[in-house]
Length: 527
Ligand SMILES: Nc1nc2c(c(=O)[nH]1)N[C@H]1C(S)=C(S)[C@@H](COP(=O)(O)O)O[C@H]1N2
Ligand SMILES: [Mo]
Image (cartoon, rainbow, N blue to C red):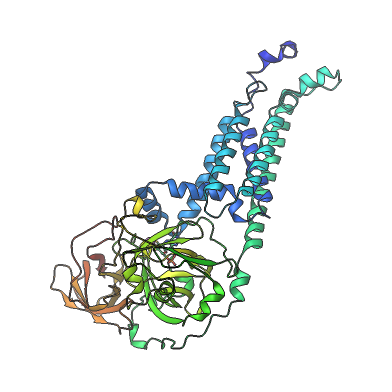
């Protein structure tokens, strides 16, 4: 029993707490924080605020890489990364927790301060939203103090002091403290999961959305004729279903904005500021349009493009009521979660009928696509125009204001480039000998597509068969019939011509700064 005779100070070193207490403390801090955040709402969730702050602080190229690599799963990746970083930092810091020098507790406290800063940096947060983070941190520190206390780490010393007869073996003490730590980890994880689920449940606008009967449009779009969809080839549906519609945004948790809470402020270089409540929109005439949305981050051959039928109100009407100053050339639109886009006033007021959209394919906007209202501007990439959950339109100038992505190296203006994509054959596909039908999509909003040409290997450009045209603001599907004769490897390349007569450029450009160009080529083989 030599060890019990040693002074506690000497004994401090051999009984390092290990990684578990730190992880347990972090789990409790995050879990309790998530539970306490339930009544406060999503804005009080520090984990998601940190994630959002990370998104905002991430350099443009890294964001780009994340979008390209993880696509719509980029947020899941980020959430997991944030939790992993918290766990690793806590595991390391917890090992340095000492009675005299509580390094772990200090690190948790600092993390909480950072978490509060992240919460307050979100545009939809108020001061009380830091409460859950602070409560979580206090609980986390308490757990760390408890798990690294002498009582838990060296119960023998405590037992001896109490002159008890049963003396713990070191192995028992270690096992007991590990079990306690694991218990806290479990409580933290359950708290986090339950808290997040309750927050989602309680603050979800799906009920508000289900109760919304969109106004009827005086002149609804006729259904597109069947010839828009080439037969005999597996192409995307001409009109993309809402569930298949591509989704890109910086929102880590989808903003939940009810119609009652929504308001749109029009201000800046105007004669009179106007704030529209959702009900005020009824005084404008709703219109319906087909518009293909495209992301500037769509690489050649990529699928960040979808075609929808949108209805809503002309932005032109909403702006006219405010009296736009003639020297304003930009509308800086802002979403409830702080995303901004800079759109030329002209694109919002000319004949293309830019929309404050409230429906997609006849239904209220899906929450992840901007419920209750978003911008849809034909002919411009989404990052400069398509603000979802939009709540603010500021009339300003391109030489005065900068939108979200422009600050990260993207072009201030983003007109959509003439592009085309091969969907069939897929890369590496083996096609049978004989007659085959290939196909894909082409787009040049708002100019429209006049022709699509296809080249096999290094052969001549041959005209493809175009699906019907429904709107110059929408893509066009195409097909190409080919006789597969020569077995072995082949290449198919596509190029489009828009309605101005301009042929898609062969010059290869990266998505940064204003959209990818170049021809899409797919390798396939004939059996
Ligand atoms: N609030 C908000 N709106 C946004 C974005 C965003 O990050 N936040 N991203 C824009 C970008 S880059 C694109 S391409 C389109 C995509 O719209 P979708 O997700 O409905 O397809 O939304 C735009 N609107
Ligand atoms: Mo985008």
